[in-house]
Length: 575
Image (tube, rainbow, N blue to C red; front, side, top):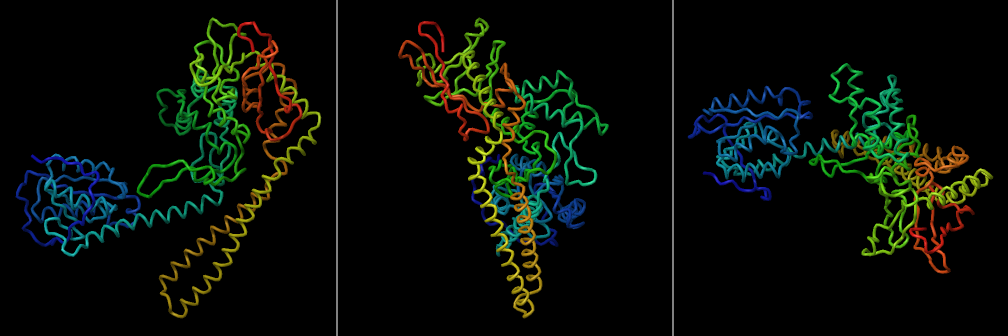
């Protein structure tokens, strides 16, 4: 009985070489064992024509097995799978048979059909297969594990086989980089958009889906989480993305056409393209061998604004992302904290959680530091009632609205004063990149002129000249696109930022705030900081900081005055 071992960390050795396809004395001594005929064809290999086709591989291996007396054949096929990894159905099925000791010989057309990772190929052909007494033959490469590899050419072949996908990956990445930096979308339009019939690279609004996306963002601003939103859409019988597309194409509808998943809602809320921009390079892979996509840092993405009509404003999208960071757990009582997820402790920085129950009336609902833990935690009792906090926030919003509406032009000038330095720094950095790109373009013209002189003098060959020229021309095109895109972005910088426009729009939208709603709170407030109470002087005085969205850097007189909650000591649970 063959003992199965773990070869996960085996250091690959040198594979084996040199089989004579004309020799007909290789009949297996044990015909009960399986002879695997392995065929593989990737999407890239299919471009090479008939030589690598499945039919050609199958006929070649079948003829070889018949001529050399192999019986009990089993054909394993991996059609459309890359050779850079071994997580393929056919090859995995074959490996399971090998582990069971049922395989006597493994045949493939050449080493590249078995795989294009020279380390893994060498590990199997030189260590794993021999340990299970499996003979490995690559017909066209003349590799036969039973005949040895006296000159070591198999390792070199494996290395060349790996260079092919590496070079292909490099070309694909370069092509995608050029397209992505030109401002064109790299993917298909998401739910809410569709391709323009007159220009496939342009997105236009989907009349049926765009209002649903807008509603999802509005519901999130209104304090609803993904699960609540999905239930609302299901209750209103809104078709899911899959159901909508199926109905248009006349395909069978899903079992539950209104069953929105939480993940679908989250994907919509986090998709930046709904602000009207092109967002490319959101993910990357560490190597062409690894298919796992890793989220890119925001600074490494390429974002071009105003490439299609927006469904959600940039300010609304930013606010949704802030709310998504502060996820709210549903409470058992019917009431939901109006400020849940926005209230923080000035002492330890922890959130204040909303405390309520069915036995409370509205005045007993309160927020308390999550690190307090009834005196057993690491922080003191930073505590405030919700009705007190509601009055303070409403008073501050009314004061800010009145101040801005009294002198909009003066407020705009003040806001610009605080933001001008940051904006000018960004523009200087963009202009510096444009200057560097122009300088590189000029240098490339000189390099290409000298390259042509070397070719004319016979110092370099024709093929090398054509390759180097093509590389330099591709770099020139990329630089020209980068210069054009960056210059347009600099020119499109508005004299007044989106944040300011959004906040002024809020003051016009809510002219007279007589009662706070979840939507008003989420649109106005970014954070509320609760300080420890001061109980000296016979009264309980507590400082409350209210930090607004968009205008936190601007010195607004009404915001400079601290908010103080006062109450007389001796009353139970006051603030």
